[in-house]
Image 1 (cartoon, helix red, strand yellow):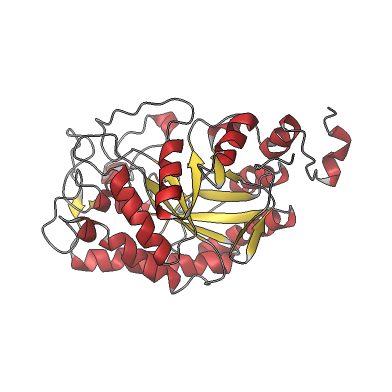
Image 2: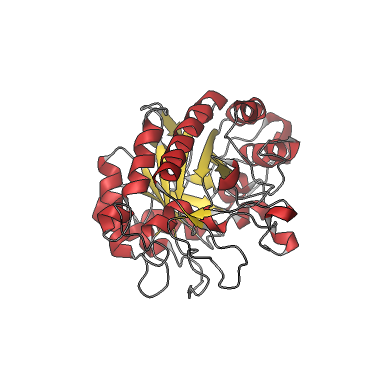
Amino acid sequence: MASHLFSLLQLKSIILKNRIVISPMCQYSAIDGFANDWHLVHLGARAIGGAALIIQEATAVSPEGRISPGDLGIWSDGHVEKLRQITSFILQENAFPGIQLAHAGRKGSITPPWQGNMKLSPEQGGWHTVAPSAIPYHANEPLPPVALDGEGIKKVIGDFRAAAGRAHDAGYKVLEIHAAHGYLLHQFLSPLTNRRTDNYGGSFENRARLLLQVLEAVQQEWPSNLPLFVRISGTDWAEGGWNVEESVALAKILKQKGVDVIDCSSGGVVSHQKIPVAPNYQVPIAGRIKMEAGIHTGAVGLITEAAQAEEILQKGQADLVFFARESLRDPNLGLSLAHELHEKAHWPRQYERAQLED
């Protein structure tokens, strides 16, 4: 019997050749937001390696929306040229290029992991971050974030809209809005970080308002025949925070508004979270959202083996499986998983003489 992992999936006008997605993973290797040959080789290698969809790392919609000074950006028309080279190569290798649009909010202005994820001051090349409320991520931060006012919120919405237009111009075929991992849109969703008393705080409806306005703005620039994903944190793993019930309610709204896939991650909004990390630990979130909201979902998090991914799909817990660290360990992940499941995979002609024999 043919595997689910290597079955086709149509999302609007595109047909994915399998259910393997390379999850967005920051490379901290850009200068002023500009992509370079590292990004071309990193993303291109995973297209050669057999995945159906390659989603580019969190790409900032504004300079202050970056996580670190090394993040990719798409706030300038000048960023598009190199990105177009990357998308062209991925398409040439029988895969689809995707992009994750992001704003880090209060979690921005930090060093890359190999420098300790330390907060950068403006004197060190950092910037003053923004958030729904002036609450720092770590209590000892010297410079708390600035609570966005009405004009600041309008700028965020406009930045996402402009970025979506550039993403289409650059040749991406899937766009994902990042509303997870404690970044700005998640900060608005979570009661732990959103203490506002205006139309953007308090009730579920108010806390979801900015994400829905960003979605509407993106849809004004992103073609209606190309898929739209939203990544959410299904739960904050912290008392009084965003939870799975609210995620289901949000997913129902997003489906109604034209979103195709909910990419189901979790956590990241507060430093005191207690995450029960284990293989498949986030899969039940994807399963519940898929079942109760009736929308395609993606499962992510400590999924490393073909049989594991296959079981998730067979049980109907998700429609796509997102691989992050495992794809860093194995750029040819799609080809490797096909071998494990005894599936025939399309190898690049240049690599055909290295095909594994069962």
